[in-house]
Image 1 (cartoon, rainbow, N blue to C red):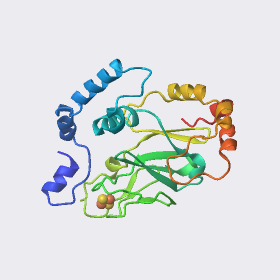
Image 2: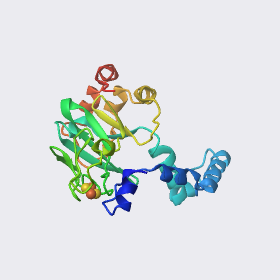
Image 3: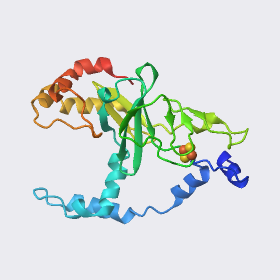
Image 4: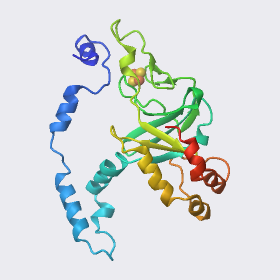
Length: 245
Ligand code: FES
């Protein structure tokens, strides 16, 4: 029996966690998008290639949900620039669909990404777009996490058997290259280097420096300095040396 269930039975605060039963139920429930997936595949196979995509690709909520599942929750995503969180404790938040994420710079310059969800009762942990903190402290009941996600403090209500080590923040895969931060929400992300090599091929420094509309960071604040100089600084040869994972 999990700590969370024990706590519930004993009238203590219930811990927010994934249980084996939850996973079992989720895995065995029918996928409500099965029909939409088949229709989508059919529309893609039969569409006129010289025409725009069929209307549902633009306005059907089911196709949006499939996009979220098949692209945004599986692929590497550009999340921001390392210069947006320049020193230890700087963080920024973003939402990928319904998935809140916090990216924080920890000790020795390491960049971490977590689901921005407290392991206690699921409160959003960091509520601002950006900031600087010594620790990640939940605003609800003040559970306190180290910048690397370890749970440091959970109050006294959890009982003496409560194991802090089991309730760190849920990590999100993160890689940085050339000043860019990429995250991946999947439990089994595709190989980072495969993605990065492909991106490097299509986004050579020459192309980006001549582009009028370089990619914007997901977060609301822009880094200081010109985009062209930042993009130039991420020349592929230099990038190879700055890969952090
Ligand atoms: S929800 Fe209770 S401390 Fe975060």
